[in-house]
Amino acid sequence: MKAYLIKYGEIGIKGKNRSMFEDTLARQVRQTLAGLGEGYTVSKERGRIYAYCPDDHDEDAVIDAMQHIFGIVGICPVKIYPCTDPETLRKDMCGYMDEVHPDFTGTFKVKAKRINKAYPMGSMDTDAYIGEAILEHCPGCRVDVHDPEVLLDIEIRDRVYAYSRVIPGPGGMPVGTNGKATLLLSGGIDSPVAGYMIGKRGVILDAVYFHAPPYTSERAKEKVVDLAKIIASYTGPIWLRIVNFTDMQLHIYDTCPHEELTIIMRRYMMRIAEHFAKEGESIGLITGESIGQVASQTMQSLLVTNDVCTLPVYRPLIGFDKSEIVDISKKIGAYETSILPYEDCCTIFVAKHPVTKPNLNIIRNSEMRLGKKMEELMQTAIDTAELVKVSGALGKSAGRRAYTR
Ligand code: ATP
Ligand code: MG
Image 1: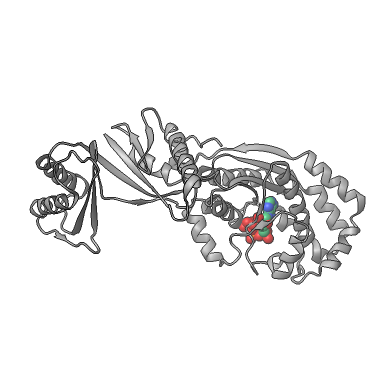
Image 2: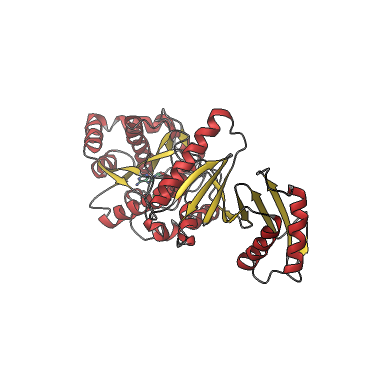
């Protein structure tokens, strides 16, 4: 039988929180693997999570699925042997080396842990005994107890569990262990990365997208849904609101100085996002803003944008350079979709020289001119917003059923 030991970060997670964290993670692993087929079981044993898989399972698919589950730090493929006697263990571990590290000539260390006290050899004696066997069995290899290339962990329980490979997981905390926030999701590079980063801290995501038909196309909207799917492949289903922003944008365009268009638009986006956030019981907003990236993201612009929000606005990319954001975007599989060349509503109604140091009072005054009509348009935008439930299923994870909340 084949199993995977799932390693997760434990620092700072104690008491009740720790078991909530573990139970949530185990449940998400269970639901994710159920999406791959029959015969998978997941269990919590001695502060560890194990996933047991059918013999003919697709290892790549299992690893890919687990690399989409926040909270997992490492994925260790484990081989399981009957627990009998040291002589059999010796043969089994030489067989393990042949199978997992064929023609091994590097450095290694054996770390045995005897949990089953009926087994006749202690942990340290087993280290030496198996170490010697491997030295004999794999000519050219050496022991290095400080920095081995291969660390062979052997857990002697009712059966013997051996593993030496640790495949990195995404880290973070299981989604659902940290409240809910609403992501302002555009078709760009930044906001999907921002959503990923907050989701990684265990936060459930809802999202809002503003479009401006017919100035923005159906393809631009589909692209945003695709980006939401990519994020949802990590965070579980996302409820996405698609807001028609056209009439509001046209009214701003007709009424306000053009260099103020972007900043006023951004304030209305935040107002509407906050409305939906509160309705859906989110306790924060998320944007992909980064200081100084564009005119609407100078410190002064952020101050003016923030002025309309009562919920905290999380901006996980605030101190990142674009190249750093691009690296994460590529790593999470969003980049290729983000760079598809469809228009965004922000870029269509943009002034040649937008203000970079907006004055809050001046912007508030400009907004006064929008009058009651703007309130009505905003209400209509809210009332007519489309609601789509987006589940993650892309690429290699296509078979995976995104977990429920
Ligand atoms: P992104 O790459 O995320 O689109 P950007 O560099 O294009 O960001 P802006 O257009 O100034 O920057 O947008 C800043 C943030 O405002 C975005 O990261 C996103 O969170 C939000 N935002 C911008 N446009 C939209 C939109 N059409 N719908 C929803 N949110 C948006
Ligand atoms: Mg954008």
